[in-house]
Image (cartoon, rainbow, N blue to C red; front, side, top):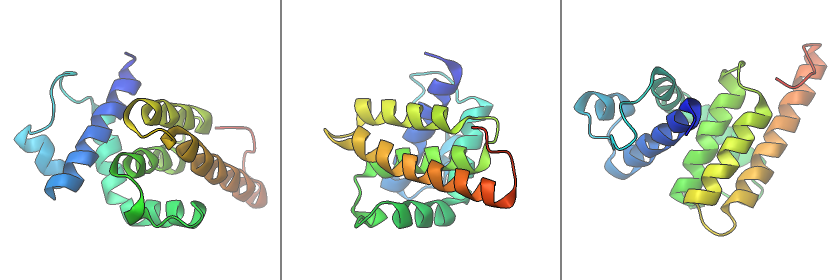
Length: 146
C-alpha cells in the first residue's frame, strides 16, 4: 500500500473512532488507542486527521450544500468521514490534485462503504471540485487541475 493511501486509511479510522467515542483526534494519537495494524501514523496521517477535525464545520457545510437532500447527520458514518477527508485535501492540500483526492476517496468507499457509497462519494466530490475550479477561474487563479 502506498504511503499516502495508508495515511488516508489511518486518518479515516481515527475520524471514525472519534465519532464513535467522542474523543478528539489528538487524544486518540496521544493515548495510542488507534489501530496500529498498519504501523504508526505518518505525519501526513496526523495532518489529515487533525486538519479535518479542526475544519469540520466548514467541511460539513460544504458537503451538505453539495449533497442534495442529504443532511450530513443522515449519511452513513463511513461515507461522511471519507467525504470529510477528501474535502479537506481538496480545500487545504494544494499539493494533492483534486482527481487524486477524489479517486482515493472513491476507492475507500468501495472497500469500506455500502453498495452505493462509491457513486455517492464520487458525485458529491465531483460537484465540489467543479465548484472550486469555477471559483479559481472567477478569481483569476490557476485553472489547470491542482
